[in-house]
Image 1 (cartoon, one colour):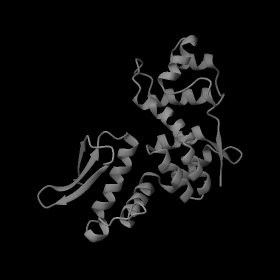
Image 2 (cartoon, rainbow, N blue to C red):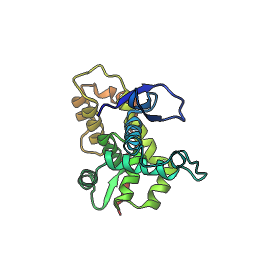
Image 3 (cartoon, rainbow, N blue to C red):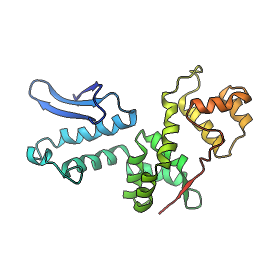
Image 4 (cartoon, rainbow, N blue to C red):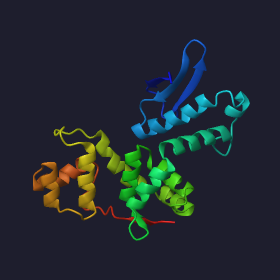
Length: 221
């Protein structure tokens, strides 16, 4: 579509912006310091602004809202969420990972990772689709437990590995199987090519604690 995407290191309170210029054309600026999943959401958010460039007045677009984001920014977020988390695919992945009307935090984190969005974006999309209850999500995000699980799991996306033939997804699935009790510690060591005694430090490298319980689950709506 001829959109120029420019990645530059910006302050943490700036996610990016977009513009349409007669000479330069369509362009989006993204904060390169942000996590990949945040950059994806911001790209889709700015895409909304480009395709609706002539539909809103400058006063509407730049209107300040003391309660948070103004209406246009909220619409851009809804567009971004719907684009990156299409309903049918999200429902399918959610149902695959739901057992006896519960879904584990770890499985939710893996859905977010598969769609390459933040855990917050996924949770609010699931609320919108009626799959999780708003009050439960609000309370959980305030507590931060699932954010901690997400942070530890996403750490593997940045971790360096001396085994390039093992993808991050493969390692992540092996760790997930171990923490959910699907495979033993010895089998995990075999799968990832590590000594049995090295598994604690291996898990720590990827942001996990061998003795932590990652099986906490949400009750579905």
